[in-house]
Length: 244
Image (tube, rainbow, N blue to C red; front, side, top):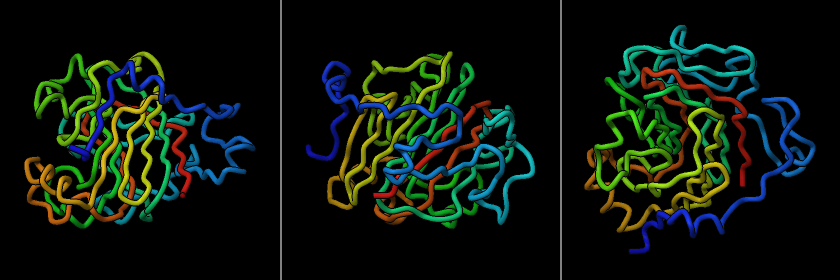
């Protein structure tokens, strides 16, 4: 089936991205990144460019900016149960998105894309494709879903990432999502985890057997980028994007 390729870690190691020169300061761009067209999605200081997924402005609680880190504050572990998700103020089509993240033990969060904030006005998270962020060893969601498709770096509830991952819960890690028209890839710390094609019969069939089956045309349209509040403490920094 040509829909996806969740790559074995041994094979995936051959697909390592050459990391650009790291900036000397967080939430800045190197000269090379600037030449290549990268832009900061978060400036490390303010809420500019972001708002609550179900709000006109940025959440007044649940999120905290501290020492160049955008922090989801600990609550009760409920989906959007505290400050709620935050989304970019504009949508994106073709892009490379990179986000540095660090999780606490047992935490759950996610980075979503193709998000339509108007799609879910009720309880829970805004709707979109999700790069899952999870403590696979401690969070119960890791045991749900099908064949591990709710674990770290998976396309949540749709496509599993490999069981073995280049991940360290004690350190900062880098999530990367690449979108080129209907082709999408998930990368974790420079290693490709999976890839898939959307807007085709196989994709629609996969969605039909997921929790997203009742959301019309799920994943087939462009949308905003989202950082998730799932009631656990998670940190983000160096949120940057290159439009293709």
